[in-house]
Image (cartoon, each protein chain N blue to C red):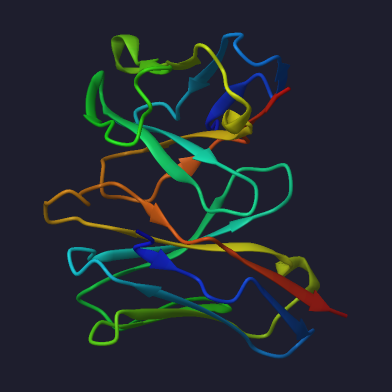
Length: 113
Length: 116
């Protein structure tokens, strides 16, 4: 069974530029999550989708971050404009339903300079 | 507000001995707890979980204990192996509703090093 796929693996951008990350969850998984992991901290949930609807985006900085999950499968996370403090690993995860264990992708390491 | 805390940033253990990783939580709505292991440059990998209706769950060398009254859980690895060296994250979720439903809240992680 294929795992959660994310791209790109690494990205370096200048502050005020925009960036987008892509995630393909495990087939059949209804729930998709985007987490932000800053160095030395645990992952922090940014947004949770159930199929193509948003369940929780309470910690998403909506003035600069946006996410969508078209057709309830793939998802993209966008940052525009980026700030230095956005430097982190962005992890996508999926689960069969919202209360079972989540499976994570390898993450995208973003560096904002 | 750190709802899930792992107070030990690191733990060093000899191969063959027991590793005990600890985790505390504050939100009484949490009723499902998980441990994840993370190697460098990889995403977290699910290890073991426990529901609040249990106080212990075993899977091979890994056992998770839950003390609901103390809002504390621990992960025991016996015997520890060098390949267990990784960052371990405790996570909690609510299955029965409320703002914590389905959402994983993670601790800060504990770096485990198992020496040969």
